Length: 131
Image 1 (spheres, rainbow, N blue to C red):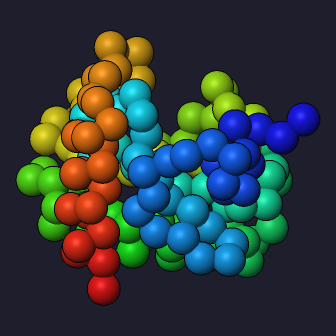
Image 2: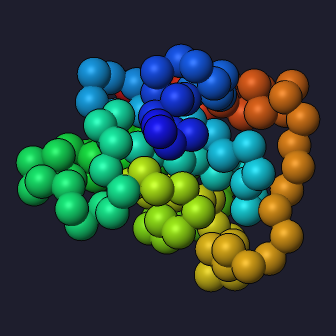
């Protein structure tokens, strides 16, 4: 059975898309740690990030860098943190999280519950800074 991220990549489940190409997709987390929390995935489903081939993994990081650059301009923060957890969804992915403090990357704290309109506005703002 396809993961929820594969279904998002296939267009079966809607998302607030930030950037997409033929191999990768970046979209807003619908239960973010902070405003602007983005998930970046390879479209090819692989459960564990370190099972991805070197070229695909380096491509994922270069793609994530493009998104992080725009995200930092769109959401005021000190840094864009990156995390690989991979326990909840069996599809390799990285989290890009705008950070003011290290606690912004604390995945055990309660998640935000933004509405669809807020997510759409955030996605549009981030996309406006893509070069």
